[in-house]
Image (cartoon, rainbow, N blue to C red; front, side):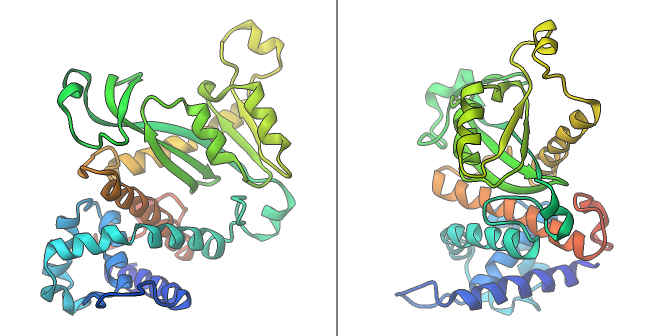
Length: 314
C-alpha cells in the first residue's frame, strides 16, 4: 500500500463514521477544513513520524494540498485549535474502530471470530514514564503543572512528569490507555483501567501484584483475572505456585514492542504541549493512529504490529 492509498482509506473510514454521528457542532460557523480531513491528517502524520501540529500542517500543505485543497486557506493556529478541540471525537472514533473494525467487544474483550469467542482473551497491562524535566529543574518547570508530579523510574531516576498506562489485547491492540502524574502507583490506575473489562487474563509485572485488587476485579460480573508476578523473588514465589511458564513470559513481552512503537515512531515521551488540553489531544491521536495502523495491517494481510511493512513508498 502506498501513502496516498493509506490517506484515502483513513479518510473514508473517518468520514463514514462522522456521517453516522450527525453534526457535532451546535453553534458557530463551520470550519473550512472538515473534521474528517483534520483527523485524517493527524492519524497519517503521526504514523509517518510527524508528531507536532505545525509539522503535520506544513507537510500536508506542501505535499498533499491536492487531497486537502482548503488547507491553503486555513492558518496553522486555526488548524491546531480545531485538532485540539476534536480530542473527544478522536477518542470515540478509537472506540468505534476497536468495536467494529477490529471486532472487539464493548467490555474490552479480545479479537473477533469463533476462536475469540471460544476462549477468554489474553491482555497485558503496563506503564512507562513521560518525563517533563529532571528533578533538579522541577521547582521552576511550568509545563503540565496541572497533571505532572514527581516520580521515580528505573532508568530515569527521579523526574517530574507523568506515566502512560496501557492495556493491550494479544496480538498488540491497545484497548485502554490513560496518563496521570508520575507519583500515582500502577495499582491505582490498574483498578480504573480494568474495571468493567470483560472476561480474560491480564498479565502484569510485579508492580501490579495485589491479592486485594485481584479479588476485587474478579468479583465484577465477568471481570478479568489479574495475573501479576509475586512482589518478591525467590523461593516464596515458587512455594505459592506463581512461577510463569516460558511461553507466558514471552506473551507479556509483547507490550514492550507496543511501547517501542509509541516511544520511537510516535514520540510519546516528547511533551510538546504546555497544558493538559493539548496533551490529551496529542495522547489520544497517537493511540488512534496506532489502532488505525493495526486495522490496515490486518486488511493488507500484514502482521498487526509490523508497521514497517505496511507502506511501500515511505
